[in-house]
Amino acid sequence: MSILAEKHILLGVTGSIAAYKAADLASRLAQAGAQVDVILTSAGEKFVSPLTFQSVTGRRAYTDQDLWGNEAHILHVNFGKTADMLVIAPCTADTMAKLAHGIADNLLTVTALAADCPILIAPAMDGGMFDHPATRENLKTLQSRSVLVAGPATGRLASGISGVGRMIEPAEILGHIRMALGRSGKLAGKKIVVTAGGTQEALDPVRVIANHSSGKQGYALAQAAIDAGAEVCLVTAPTALIPPVGARVVHVTSAQEMLDALLNESGDALIMAAAAADFRPKQAAKEKMKKRDGIPQIQLEAAPDILKTVSGSKSGKRRFKVLAGFAAESRNLLENALEKLQSKGLDLIAANDISAKDAGFGAETNRITLLFAGGAKESLPLMSKTDAAEKIIEHVARLLE
Ligand code: CTP
Image (cartoon, rainbow, N blue to C red; front, side):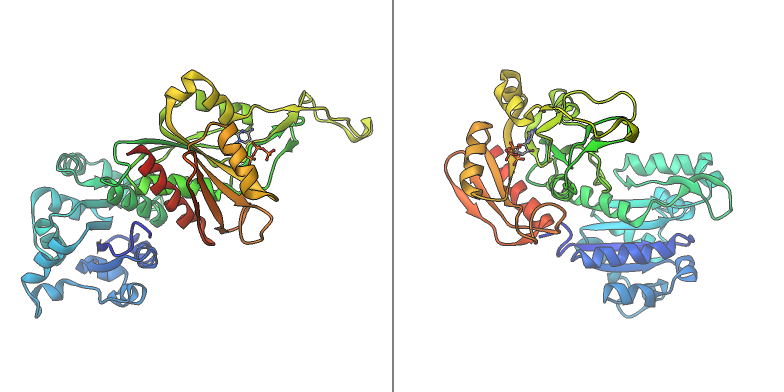
């Protein structure tokens, strides 16, 4: 179940042109299963109408009129008590100032003052306003009171100039929300290292031997570990994916680089979801291989078996308490997976039938069977890579208990 499922999120929208992006954020939150109540300030309403938010959340959006309406004074108190989080995106310099000074002159700021849930703001304003000493002071005050601040980013501002003050993108705000909601999860205080993507082995300066791994399962695992409160290091081979917010990302290209990166890392668990190369050219040509020189004869050699190297060395065993891997198989799935579990010294292996169209490389879904060092086995039905990641993370958390 997504970390956002059944969460009650209050989304405050204030008067910035970035308010139109708040509709996208509200939609993403609702699609992830959250119950989203939107509160617009009167300036926010000038940019986007309550109807826009109602249409994407399926719930009525609130405005300052509701401060004096039927539910009157109890509305903001209720909101403040029942919400899992108050997110203000975009948050103008004016609203930041009000929050910092406890001013409560509209439904949103009254709610913020009454709220005992975590508050996250995504500032949006012109560069000069963000750099103003008053705004800087307010920001410091808010941070000292544990208000979470996401952004702002550098980029083109509404004034046409470029500077710091752009609201960060909705997908990124969503990542910050997930990270904040997950803070006290099962893996709080634990460090998880996840590898992802398919490594590339250079043939010459322009060509590589690669594989079909998309990185989706590894990135989903990194996100699931963050959702569970872990500190995450994502060691990733090249992919087209955006790393989850909160992950420390180490970019590598070849299997050797992935191994070197892991030998510099330690943590509670290592989850090897990467499709690391088994073979690499014995020697990468220094110059581009030319057609006119004929078809090259490429000699291959073994690439390092990363998991075996990590689990086989004493320092490797000390480096991670739990080692988990994947077995990508096109035949004899469980037999081969069991052999890998044992020979690579793993605590857990996810056996993955890559011959099926709906599982394995590039697919959105996976059908995996988990095999444990103690002999236990759990077959999971076809599920999204996100759900599979959550299941694996639950087991890793259990192994770490
Ligand atoms: N793996 C690794 N180093 C490699 C290749 C794979 O650590 N050079 C890891 C993978 O990340 C995965 C596990 O080992 O967690 C099994 O990978 P898989 O490709 O299924 O098996 P291989 O060990 O490469 O064996 P084979 O290709 O012969 O099936």
